[in-house]
Image (tube, rainbow, N blue to C red; front, side, top):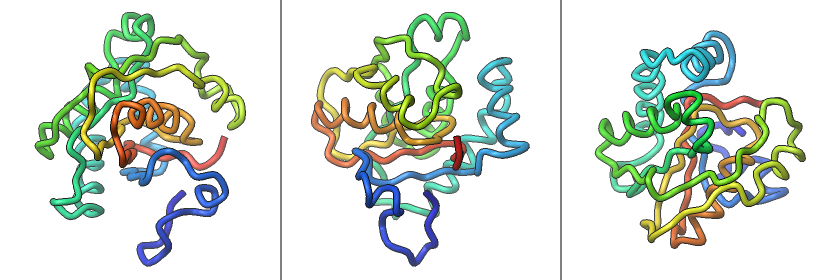
Length: 186
């Protein structure tokens, strides 16, 4: 959850149940008009929103990290292959690709898979989201110690947490989450 600049490193929810990722950076709150732009990008292939969303996320990242603190690689949240075929693209990959080029950080999307076609998270509460994603992701090969997962929206953090676990199994030590927007209620 958002914290003031001078606050501690972790929010109350993270202090109660520590996630597998260390830090979350979001460019926007998930509210109008951003939520509408993201929906148009995802469901109506309005890819022209990608530069704006990625540009603002890149600016948030630059405000948060010193250049030497940036992760070594970016990992977009993978879609199940069936969903990728239906949609024709992965919005998280589009964001990560743009960020990779803008920040000169390696993109490692080819090393992660979503091998279970899970139910849409938007219809689930926090407990159901966590259960829905258990074991949905896998990662292959080795990874640098410091990575950032890239996604369009983060709500409960269940997706990021499950993917971070798969990356840690493959050698990552610090996993951060970068998202275009952060939703604060479900």
